[in-house]
Image (cartoon, rainbow, N blue to C red; front, top):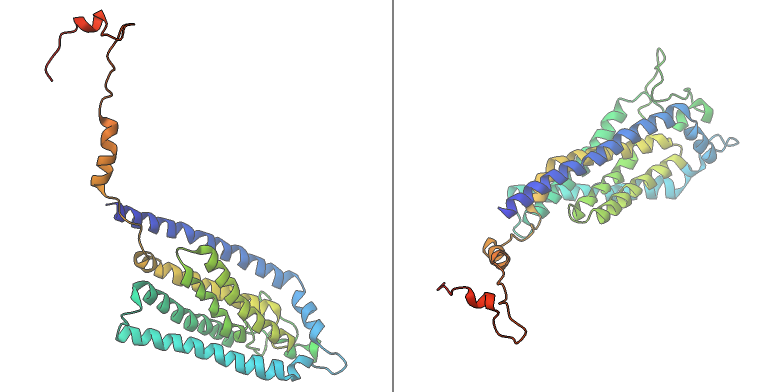
Length: 289
């Protein structure tokens, strides 16, 4: 009985804990819309890395930006996600006995995050009308700067540059937070920040190369976080039911512990000054109990 109540309480706590991420996603989406539509932070940052004299972004010509970050690091992250997917499929076909139910739920969530989040970002990018910085006339391109909520001009040629696809290759690492859920939320938050930081770093290098604007990367982070919240909601019951439960209370031990409190308190005999029973006590007829 006690274990059932503990599980039910855990499910209610899980539902309440998901409200905070949903509120965060709602507020952050509104903030990103305001930043992208009513500020020039994208242009300010792109101006820093653009060389007007040469008409290009110098970081796009470096080995660090073009080869190391864009190819090597990206491939390592992509193959890491692919290995997680392979492990999840193998476990689905033939369950690994050492993995356990909790480990299995975490593995499947990580595999889905490594697959769904990049796929979603790339799907939206393929349908996007916005251009990259290098394609904007401000940076010697051929198209005017277009914001997310702007009306698309007639005859507009799609740029397919929103959101940031390269950042999604590392942004899914934020799902590593599940390794510390549900019992270590602080460590999970740190893992989420670290994984998202890897994606932000990839996105920042792309900004230096003139491949993306800041809001492109921020929206990739938002979409990845939304996917992670949905996956946590889908797997919350599995994570809680597989987690070590609190030991059930022994009802017999509880009754034995509470039994002495229910016994009547004995009344001390009335004694006189000499230590003998008083006259009132002596007059009480004795009864056999």
